[in-house]
Length: 395
Image (cartoon, rainbow, N blue to C red; front, side, top):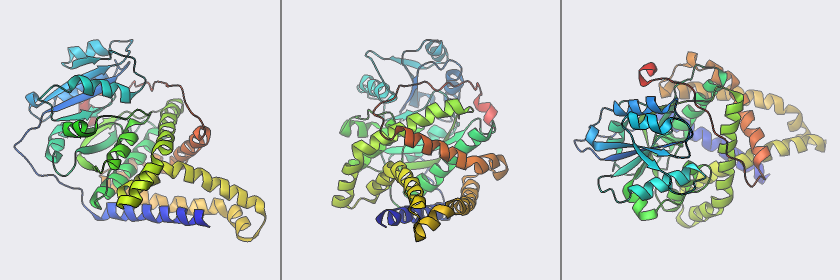
């Protein structure tokens, strides 16, 4: 009974945040004549196909060229990534010690740039991104407006490839709208999404950079909340991300996400719960829900299957009716997704594949949760990026 009460509470909370996301406008940050100096950091291994177009999009920012520098963080590259980056005007930061994760790469960069007095904030991108021309302008507006960490909006540069890339776009729209936008509107905290996020240098001075797990974005979000720092959201600052178009590639990426989230769950859940109780932090409670959600999903299906074999009253009915329950839930979610997509400014006709096949996308997550729930380590595998698109192609 307690478990079902928890499940109901989580569902009602998600519905609440959904209505908040629809009912409130995106925050508009004020214009300013002050141009803060940004260090743009791009961790890169073997990214020769995509690194050039990314840097070109950063060179075309509607922002003073003297107010930002582009750094490529070269990590054991075996192709022309470094050569292309330098030819496009980026600066290089090489790893002077063994690194095992994106978090390690960022830590080296922060250490090397620590003495640069010009830098006021760091902005992190993935090598496969393309960046909207007004990204830095909008991040600059948000600078100093109540947060020291900000997340921009993540959208896709290859949404129309197939059903899988369309599912990724629906996933990020829900994350942008139902979590980041809604939570910030309610005075809570957004969450970092791996790319297009900004961190003021003063935050690094105060707390250092202690993230070390596979999903450094979720971990840094958690660390920030434990220090009482919330994360802002800038909807108008967006990047285009390359989504996996093949199941094999998606499997590699999603496995990394799931495993990293489970790492964070084991390491930080109790600390967040203590913070929730002691300081009554709803933002910490939000993060608890995020971290333990994979466990809730696995327990839900395990209990439903168990109920079916109990052969008793409500339990048996629930087990036999689960297919219809899931179909009704799917229908309700189609309505939720439709409103979220429209609010995001996207077109339903372009994302119908993602809406229809989204349950299959969720099934991949569930399968990976089960396979990785008790795993202690995984072997790192590269996600290959091969879509050589330019920022002009996104118009």
